[in-house]
Length: 276
Image 1 (cartoon, rainbow, N blue to C red):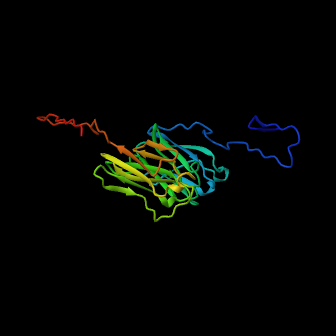
Image 2: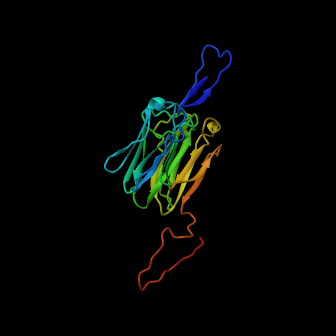
C-alpha cells in the first residue's frame, strides 16, 4: 500500500512482477495547490498548457513594461510529456504585459502537442495549437499584439507527408494579398503548425487554403485546420476539404457600424443601406 498526504493512492495485492511504478503528488496539475488572491489593481493571469514530447525544453515568462518578472510556478523536472498543466499569478491591470513562451527543441509532432491558452481576468487573451517555432509572444493589459485598427489573425494546420503541396493566402476586400505562405521554408511532415499575422480590423478578409497534389490529401494530419480572428475561433475543419477551401472573416456582411458615429452640433446622421 502507498499513502501520500493522508490519502491512500495505491493498494496492490498479489505478485506484481519484477517492477511496479506509481506516481504520487501533483503530476497532472490542472488546478492550483492553493487559491491565489490578487490585490487591488491586479487581476489573475492563468496559463493552461499541454506539454510536448520534451517539456524540459519549454520555458515562459510574464513581464510588465518595466521588465518586472511575475513569477509563474514552473518545475521543469516534474513536468511530464504530453500532459496538461495549470499555472497562475497576479498582474497589474494598468500595465503593459508581455507573455513569452519558448520551445528550444521546436519539435511539435502531432495535433495534440504544444497547446496553450492564457487568460487575464475574465478575458481570453490567446489560444495557440501547434508548432509555433522557437517562441511565441502575447501582449495584453494596456497594450496589444497589433497596432490600432489591426487585430490578430491566427491559423493552425496539420500537414501530411508533403507539406510543400499546401499553400494559403489572405486577401483584403480589394483582392490585395496581405499575407501568404512561404513554401521555400521546409516544414516537417505530419506536423501541426501555428501561424499568426496582424491584419486590418475594418474590412472583409478572404482566406484561401489550397492543396496542389491531391494524391497525398488523404494521409497524415492534413484536413485539420483552425482559424481565429480578433480572439474568436471562426472556423475549424476536420477531414478532407478537397483541393481548395475559402473562408471569409471580418466584417463581410456589415449591417452595423464598427463604432458609433457621434455627430457635432448642427449636424445629423446620414445613413446608407445597400444590397449589392
